[in-house]
Image (tube, helix red, strand yellow):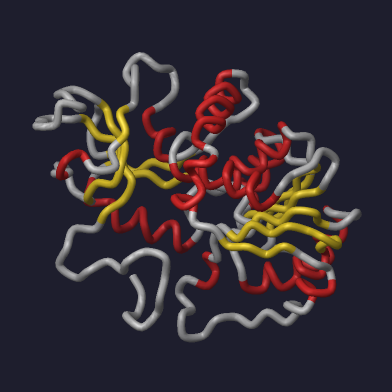
Length: 289
């Protein structure tokens, strides 16, 4: 959803075509021997009650889905693309080390909450920010972050000085704009910044916010790298499948998603993400599986 002259890593939605998103679905009818009626699968499907997926392209079967204690919606979140984004981005670019400080923007979101908990498992000091007091409370009381604050209510520069007195070694970037500009001032030498998203800029294609402290990437020798999860996921798939379900079962990793019911509410659910109103991964439930 962007002007035609703005390039990105994925094709723009086309007017008149069904929008697509990651979904968890039940196979109703199949001509593919790899999938049978009643199987639960995850993959890209349409914003619709029933989708046709030619040849079952890019679908993945969820084994023992109905018998598992793990909610099906988790396969769109912590066990799906957001979880892999957190895992692969943190390890490939963030290179976390025990005792370091990591700062996470949009820390209660679908990706951020997973990044923070993985960092806790690996022994880092974890600091996060969110735009709502209830989200900050969730980070501190449930996810056990070492520090967190509501960026809408503080002077960001001062808040980072207080929450990260020894500077920032890893910044997991989800926001961009002013947040990134101030964080650069607090990064330590040789800090690493995995660039996962820049949600503050998505509606500012023609008027992006300036970054004044960009020279610090050079002077502090900061590693600043964007990534697209599908390009690096294969390198981490096996370890991800071993670590993350185990951490969930051990209580080391908890997850929150935000559900709305009914296909008619899909547009509003999407807008809630852009307004920052969702609490965790935003999902829309169409039917009981």
